[in-house]
Image (cartoon, rainbow, N blue to C red):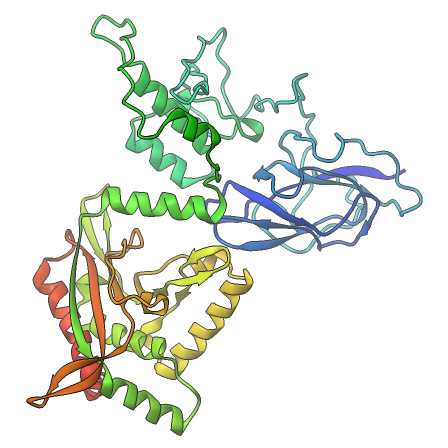
Length: 476
């Protein structure tokens, strides 16, 4: 007799807590092999095809295309050991149901075929004890008793300004793990003084999600305690910036997936980093001539790669900008290697692929790696590792036909070099007015890591290399 197993969305790494179903690759009744991709999901980092670690017949799919699924929630149910003609009825809710947490479970007998592929959260491993999931009548997954402490008769939660109730407050536990996967959730709680042990998570098996912490923060702001312990009246709401009719009928676009991650990261950057920007115009005529000469002598080298090589040379002279700030320790951390990010516009939005160890690559190697990462970005194939860990960002906004910008620093980095379009302009060259190829360069920097003199010196060195490429010979 076939055994029906549920395969849950695994932890895809990098603190990701949810993913959006983009496209189902299998249908109910299909026969799947071990490690066969069954669904394509979009995380805040990249598009990922998720393989199923079990072989058998698909008896149920959970979630429609476009739905968000938290880590640990079931994706498909598979009848292990069944064929297309012998698969029984699904032992799980019908397609599109919510379901609670819990993944594919263990194989007590150790007889079924299981994946040798390892993603975080499933894959090769020893047998695990089977647990009975509790499914309340209303369909909302209940926290596992070992994950979240339960207090008797909790007080009703206060409604927030958005109308959603805050997460219930529970009796704090002095021992045991806090059911939180995402470090972003932990940091958000720490920044607002929220005790995670007093929050009941709404995710699978009591997992505390970002929304739970945000509700707790909103509840603390909405109903502050007075000196005698009584709840103080909520402050009067601020005037609405737009009419209620406009809000009711306006188009609403969810801030989730890549767009939500970009919004969170840029907001964090603006909130935490005291940034400043300096800029300079540079004559790029000789740089373009040098690039033409390089391309005539060998494989094509992109202008972006040449600018990346100039960046690594400049950061070697001004290592203060290849750094980050540890706010908890109140320390500036100067980083030993240069992992150069570059802004790339794709159909999914703006992403920043990272060239690892850019300081060890020449212009030709940088050009090859930038081209590879750009192609992967446009195809949605970038891995989380290729989108994280940058120490400095190069932003070529000149491709949009603009001259200048004051970009937002890619948190937690300390600086960014911006490059505008290269266009012919009147320029004084060797004492005479001439038409030259001119570009505007800008440097946005974290004023905590250095002062304007350092940032100005960095930008001036970059401009000197653009105007006189032979300056780079000193670093080759």
